Length: 124
Figure 1 (cartoon, rainbow, N blue to C red):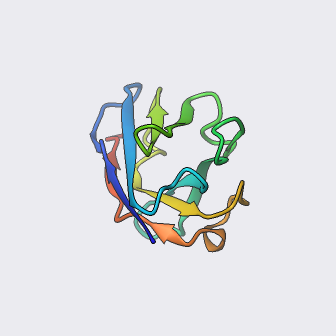
Figure 2: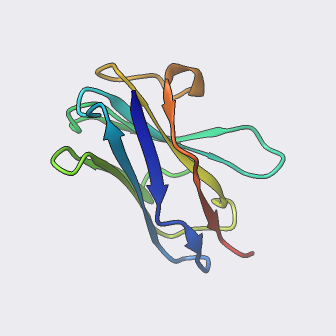
């Protein structure tokens, strides 16, 4: 079992930045692909970014590519999402996810472990 805990959410003005963290505990997440998803009120969960278990390969949703950066620190068993140039289209509950595979497709059903999520708010 892997337990995931997100932190770093908050309210930021459009154009600002936030850095989310996802700390993994329990079974090491080193051999797990990990990802960020987000869900806005009344909308389905949306893929944001994924990273393989080496940290060497990343993939982004078109809506965030060039603004967001996913990374991981295996020594700290933590994954990050640096979010720059935030817009009013970015708010939602951001959740991290993991699966015990080298990499995974950008869809929620691929992932076995989920955190509780952290709220990101960007006022219009």
